[in-house]
Length: 456
Image (tube, rainbow, N blue to C red; front, side, top):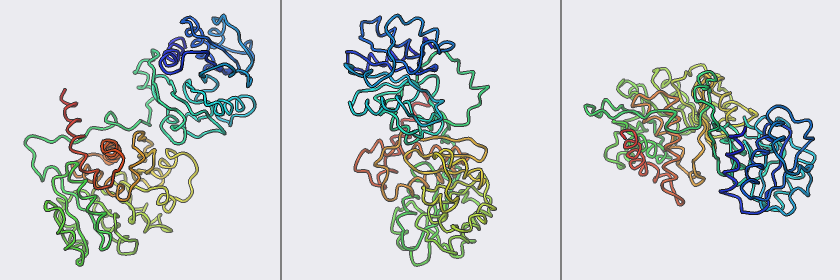
């Protein structure tokens, strides 16, 4: 607790304007952290106004010890606790809060917002659920949140992530070895959660895999975007299978792309060297596509089902689920998820895990806080995808990235997680004004940087 309070005080010195600081302490360990921060800031000459929700005599354990070390005044928490203050340290409630804020705590947080005071939260902003990111009634918009040891899901999931501001993860002396006994199943998505396929000096295009993408007859851009992404991420060969009437459109595109008829589809699947499959982008909802999906799944090869390949099973998703396994990646947005799984309450993490458990497939549930979930309960949360990624065709690029990584031999859960991270990183590298065509072109620089880091 002493180390935690020190980390909070350090953040306050860096981020809050110099002046009187309101430190709002709750009845638990978060309040104890607040008492430590108050003592350290006051020692450094800061003006501190400390208010407590509850009675000091009812504090327990370490929080009581730290309250005893504070020699300044302790006021009851009221709206007046903010008077004359230029900033706030919110040490009211931590990640364990399970009910909506009410009473004086809610009134003070509302007043903080009205006064537009900069806020630093301890652990999580009061009112944010630590596991789901849900806002329990109200929570402050924070300049920063200081948490300890590792981030919590509530820091990564919407809408809680928007409340946190800058996330500061402080080392307070907990050894990393405790993770061996905890065995966490949720990770913030990033290179530490997966390793990209190695490009071997003695490799060749066939050893880097051959992705097969089913293209549609009308919305031909979707499959072409996916194919370019698959090639940029490292697949050795990419073939688009398309209706006879659209073959000319696909052949007039990138010269390095292979094109073959999609009818009969069994013929396109017959070449076992086409070791990873993508169906759905621009495919058109109907029995023809659904039949091709079942045929692709019957091969047992890693498969990505996106867009129309998912929506086509609305009302009979159980038939799809009977053919799924953890070598298949489903990539729904919220609407497609509802068509397959119905209305599922909870956070994106809870919904993605439900879908993965029910279907037996890896589920990538797209959104500002994209979650990839494995049927065994593992999950990653992507936290750094910029909002300009919401543009037509970006989902097709994401599906292409996944199938390109699958073709190179990545496990589906890792491939989906890596693709989601690369997708967001490419968008961030380009910046505002992004269109889907820009995403594959941003990949080489990102992959080169990752390669240099891996060899340093």
